[in-house]
Image 1 (spheres, one colour):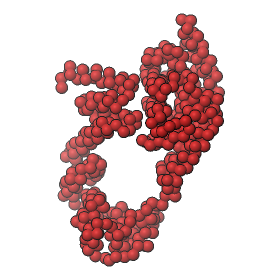
Image 2 (cartoon, rainbow over the protein chains, first blue to last red; image 1 turned 120 degrees about the horizontal axis):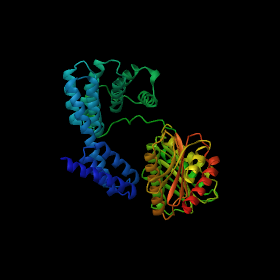
Image 3 (tube, each protein chain N blue to C red; image 1 turned 60 degrees about the horizontal axis):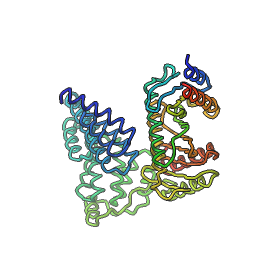
Image 4 (tube, rainbow over the protein chains, first blue to last red; image 1 turned 30 degrees about the vertical axis):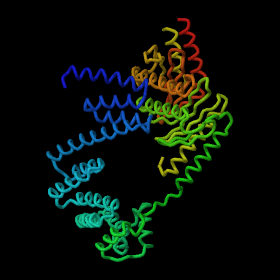
Length: 365
Length: 119
């Protein structure tokens, strides 16, 4: 690309950036992302797609742009890591490369990287861990005995090279438990110190000790699972006290209580593409939802770029009354009320809704 | 010192106020009292963006433009006050009491509006 072409693109870029601000639509975000891609600025294209999806979460073209930009970003990262590996190969770089390839969903590339890694560093457990996890993923998806056998082989090799590898022991123990080889699962878990147990590991230990043993021959258990098309034991369940439905019900109740407060006209709780509405709102297509989404998004951008942290609360006043918005990440609660309504109390209630919904989702604040 | 600048300097002395500025709706700086911490072009651009996006979203939702927008972020607070063809932006620290400064901000906005009308 010559200088004149480049200058033209930069000019176009400035125009599109202004258009995105003034007339946001999926099309304007896609046009902007396309220019970033033409300028080899994949990360900016990804950012444009993410910004667009916040405003238009259902846009197929923005999702396509995001996938394309993500791939471009991954490609750049992979090339960079390959270059660094060529100059100074080490296990950490190979692990990073396998992680990027795995995130990009290219299991073939992960296998090739691990093969090269294991040849160069034969005493490193890393490649066997990655291969084990890759086969394990394939096994849980297809229940093919061959994938299961490969996963067992790789994870056992990782443990052989690094006997203190707790992660490999847990993954293998879970696999043995799922296919019914509970005795082998127990032996593996007994070698894992109990001090560092998290909720998942505690559940696994509990379920392994309660499960009925089906045999100890791993190959025949894997074949039996393949023949039956299912695994005899369910995955370890998380011990989360609040169930999804109960969480939603409590949010709905809290929102209904806010909608009944003096002067409140509309109340909404939005999480990603989903919304709960109360008050004078017909359905999820009410323009109020889009209005508060866009205002919150603009508030986020303003705060971040001004370097004052993330946007938490906003109060917009006008002839229409007052809009109160509270948000945390992708969760947002908002109200439209009369100017005489107790806005401080409403904001406190909205904050409570957002906080309790985050608790229900298991997000740590 | 012109009356607009005078009003801003006075507002800057209110507790918790770190800086203030008047920009036209399309982002041109009319006057400012920001101090070294903030860059005027950035504050002007962002404020214009926030005001325009908010007004556009309100209009699309069948509502009229805003009179004031109070924003609380993790490390700071800001108040945008519409003064006709321009906006008064007040930047405050995270511990500032917006409610107690509100009267001063409103008075400053009214003075600025009057000044703009006279000139």
